[in-house]
Image (cartoon, rainbow, N blue to C red; front, side, top):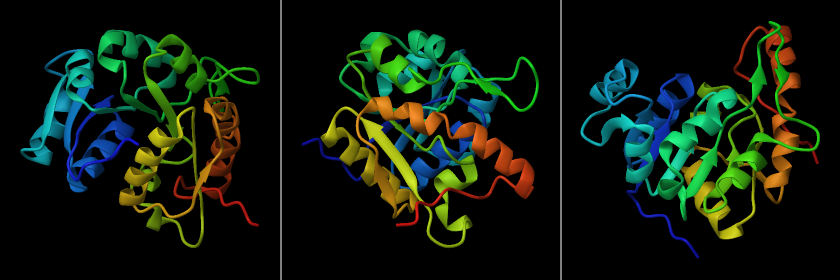
Length: 221
């Protein structure tokens, strides 16, 4: 079984709100983190590195993927495959790739539609494109504030995980537990990404109705 050390080298691909939140939380929970972007001198990545101390660094997608023992994909879903190609298949092979992205299409305005759905998903697409990677889909059904601080939402609420390797999912669940998650629901293999990604249209409508992104789903049993 794969074991997670107290401190690991972790790559975060993407410099937006999600990448910033995830990278900062991973630093806070004791890991070394390299944030990856298209260029080695991305201003958002540099600012993040300066704010997070000695365990934070930045570089290109390829630099970060080579550095990380685990890789978090925090890129926009519509550009994820291109970003992972820039990261390099050789740097992804044999590593856990945690996919947080949703392939949203904003070309016709709000609300967005899904670029991939029904009989496929972004999670499955990543696993096919990079068969050597060990893809786990999680954290894609909530706002980035809630991802790293589930206590922001009152009461019981859940996070979903799916992927093809049970040992790998255990490693990811340990990280989620460090983030503060208690109700982790394992939906099975990576094809369950279809279900979690298709929650996004509901999530977006709820955000408009509730007037806040700070909420989450709960399965009552």
